[in-house]
Length: 512
Image 1 (cartoon, one colour):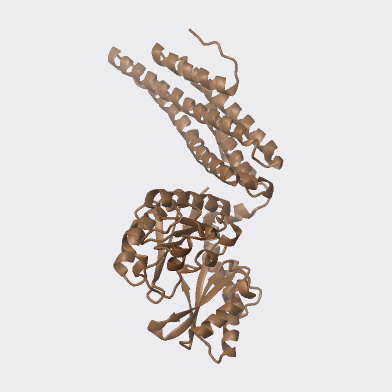
Image 2 (cartoon, one colour):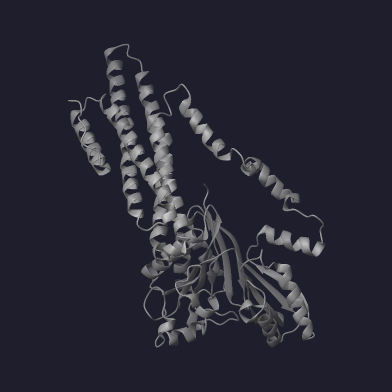
């Protein structure tokens, strides 16, 4: 399954394009990471960069961006309309595809510790990654800004960071790292320079002071445009859509004799958010997202009709591999089937860890379960790759047997090729067995921390892992029987015996 996350770091620099370009270059220096958008605001003196990709790659990119921002941004010389506590002010991770919010929490915690290890910048965790209830809301963490936090950390235990020493970095401040759903940064500009009006409107619409759910807002003065702005973060656009926010800002503005002169989206916005807004303002009857051309095309290209079918989907996913194994051909065979069973065991481990960490009863084990989930995911990927690798290794043996043997030279080359290919065919299942035995042991270790309702699934996974490891070892043995290198065979059998012992199997007799 493809795994994608988004990261939207906010940097305290919105006036020097060269610095922002250098930060963006650092972010995009990691293969597989895509910088999708970049916004600079001189009044806020802040830039927002959107990147996406595989979780590990995005995490490394974010770390490089934090390092470059530390080099280039000095908060002791920074001024701007937007509150800030760090050169890299906030660093949120957002699940997009094949990833859930808990994965992003685990990633945020890992990145936060690495920021301290690499750069000695203290870290606070916020939103879903918060370790304390009062730090869920970013404004609580950012209260007093860089200057106020610098003083409070010297004397107030409640303002100490989650990671690092109790003092801000001299020039880079602190970084606030979190995990959240897709956020829309949405601003409404007013036809007045009076920021007190913008602040009153912001207070009326934000949830913390009795306004709309999932809305955070504040008033900002846009000196360059001689306007006041209601700056809004919309944390759940499906529950509180953009049009509802705009209409409430418009109504509140009328109380003070002003009106919106425009609105803007900072960064990227989901298509669904625009569909919801269009439906409202156009008063479309019986509107469905399926009427949008791009949605229809994407569904057709991805095979969505199959995925949408309720009956037979799981069987349909498994059938191609089952048919390939059942076909009257040597590959895929027992080795590939063993790797497949092992990958399935690791996938069950993922499911168990992923569901368990969502349960309140297992709250004390969230970090351990998140680490196990990531470990199982990588193991499943490695074992899935071994399904084809095992088949290829056996195909190489078959190809060696087909080499010509018309004279002594050809016969010698053929025999050498057979021996070399057979070693490869023994090594692949040994690697599978080694990885699977470790998986077998790891699944056993999880039993004490997973939810009680998940234990039967965990046990199924462990039984599968044990069977897969034994199947892989049987494939090792059958290939060793055809080898003439006695020292190599003895070494391989010793490794296989050690793995069997870890499985709890009695020693097996081997051929002389």
